[in-house]
Amino acid sequence: GAVVSQHPSWVICKSGTSVKIECRSLDFQATTMFWYRQFPKQSLMLMATSNEGSKATYEQGVEKDKFLINHASLTLSTLTVTSAHPEDSSFYICSARFPGADTQYFGPGTRLTVL
Amino acid sequence: DAKTTQPNSMESNEEEPVHLPCNHSTISGTDYIHWYRQLPSQGPEYVIHGLTSNVNNRMASLAIAEDRKSSTLILHRATLRDAAVYYCILSKRDDKIIFGKGTRLHILP
Image 1 (cartoon, rainbow over the protein chains, first blue to last red):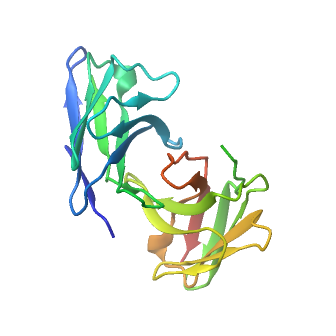
Image 2: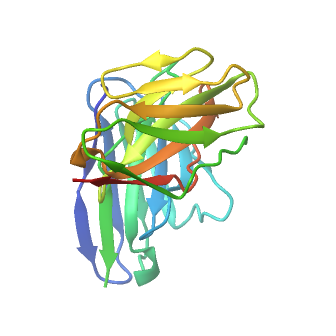
């Protein structure tokens, strides 16, 4: 099956700093990538949809100025958590879809801990 | 978005078949039925998906009711590694995937 990677797999940062998470589709070109967040013992929550070369579409309640998404190429999307605070600590997961596909393929996730 | 209903949790014995039910009475004609599973501290893993006909792959089988208002994911021979949260999701082609609460499957040795 299609492979999606994320980097880093975990990160610890100080409150007020910014953190960038990368999502790559390794063996296909992904015109659309998605970013999810998951808190402990909860389900995944969709944050935004990212289309290559255009601005991301954010779900209701997600601050676009805090969670910056860039999808500059067909194999790479990045999520930057700006001015991170402890409440942003979560498991961030990306997924990717290639054109015409019925389904999505998910990355392994990035665990962010903000001290 | 059309909703799905799944049991919160299920138990099964190792090496026995597991049938995970999903109700989706408001499904539309263009909704695909997707199943993903998530092991602890990992991203979701694609299991299977279908539109109208039953589907089989190396991981599982998907049985879809004739009226499409329900479906069942079948794991033919459960192992301890199949313990996970299983999500049944409806989504149209090229549309986003929204996760519900899923079914937590426990496998008993």
